[in-house]
Amino acid sequence: MPLALRGRERAKRERAGVAAIAELDAVTIGQIAAGEIIDRPASIVKELVENAVDAGASRITVSVERGGLDAIEVVDDGKGIAAGDLPLAVRRHATSKLRSADELEHIATLGFRGEGLASIAAVSQTEILSRQAECAVGARLRAHAEEVEAVEPSPAPVGTSVRAAALFENLPVRREYLRSPNAEFNRISSWLASFALAYPRCTFTLRHDGKDVWVMPASDDERERLAMVFGRRAAQTLLPLDASAARMLEGGLRGYISAPGSDRPDRRMQLLFVNGRLVRNALLAGAWTSGYATFAMTGRHPYGVVFIDLPPDHVDPNVHPTKSEVRLRYGGQVFDVVRRAIAATLNAHAGARFREQTGGAGVEFSFAPPDPAATPAALFEAGVEAAVRPAGGMRVLAQLDRTFVLAADGEALLLVDQHAAHERIAYEAIRAAARNRAPNEPLLVPQLIELDPVQSAALDRALELLREAGLEIEPFGERTYRVVATPAGYGARAFDLAGFLDDLSDEPKQRDVRERVWASLACHSVAVAGERLDLAEMTALVERLQHCENPMHCPHGRPTMVRLGSTEIARMFKRV
Image (tube, rainbow, N blue to C red; front, side, top):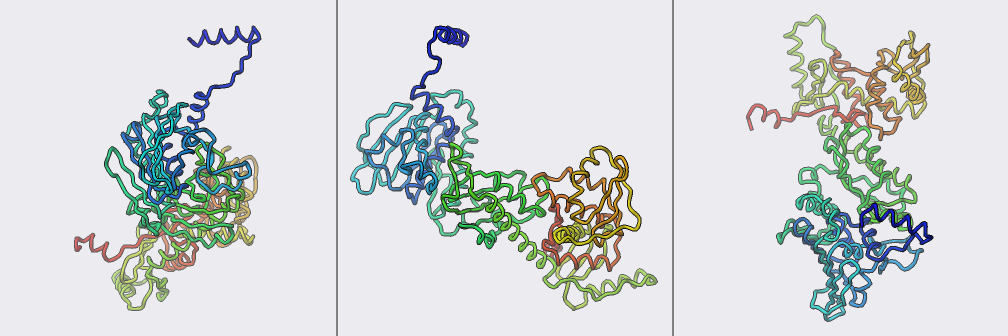
């Protein structure tokens, strides 16, 4: 019936007093519910693989035909389903994992809603073959929409095999929505490989159009699977997560995170497992951002995997039909633990990298400033003599392009970005002063600055945080301000307030607002590229850098130094 006629018919019935509300039939209910859970082939794989894990499987094989559009089959060696339970398995809200509402607060399985198999059967031609160990023969059941055939005996190995064919054949709009077979297969492969990280003792096999694509054999080492998910080279840079902060958590924490400088343009590979469930959680995604606050560059994102184990009553997985999101009872505490663990891991790595870059011997301070009356040749000879002197330590040699500090230890050259290094030193000093409420340094002559309306509004929002960091700014007329005090040690430098405000507006909003202000404040109060430094200033800069919590990166995530070893230099000269 055309829509216009339907509307007129409904209006006529309402005028006649006939009820306009009617109970939906079972087929319609099934398809509506299935639309919330099964939206593409990967959804079917997710539901069936999670069921297999709940059944105690040690081997799971996923076979896909034409990206899952034609058929998906998941075979496991779990405990199987009793023949008498098969008709119930495809009934909505029928499950072996839950008996009452009270148990929703203590869910320890991946599945519990009793909708997975029913939703799969609603949108595909489904066949289940299963046998339990105590049974001599298996049982087979076929179902499609609300049509469920009788259970029939069938030979089968111990475990369960579920095959879903002709996906969305009865929902042509949904089928048109699907992408190409290769794209849908890649989604399946990516999800299954990621999911397998949490279950290293289970063997996972993925087949496509009759051919094995990959196999993840069972292993006690989680690291062996990282290369499959993140790539072999990327996996080699992953750092084991420092889980010492987990003592504050009633549960466990472990994982692997990418080293600074090894990042990606999006967050898709920031994987999170809560109690073995691969989930999304906006709060814990923020913990990555906060933990990498001064280690990652703007627009770049770290990657890795974090496993969190919590008491079941601290987690609510009953948030989304696909069970892909969770809510945490003590979310703030978990956020802080994850953030601290990430930050501790990165700080320890930065310290180790700095010792490696500088040869582990620190900076040599055995030279005096050069004699201004000396000839260029004499200065060169003095520099060479200092560089080859047998005493250990990294020696500062010269400034390149008024931007980089050149140092050497006899084994390698070290190039230090003077602005990035000074910015890191200033940031940590400003942060410490703000936390300790250290006194600032008044200026003898206040610095007057006039701002445009946008900058003025931005400054008004940041004034209190700037005072915490040691920068005192007072209004001095309409959109005019004066800087009356700066963080201790930076009074001699002109502060670029307008540049600071522009920089602050470009900062990623996910970063803590205090860290954003402190980082931008440091950036605009230190030595810049193109500024001449004398030998004593360069030496002091490198020496102070080695006492920083993170000497390898400026607060905006750029590297402070690059080491050129003998091998790299020899390669430049075609000697290797």
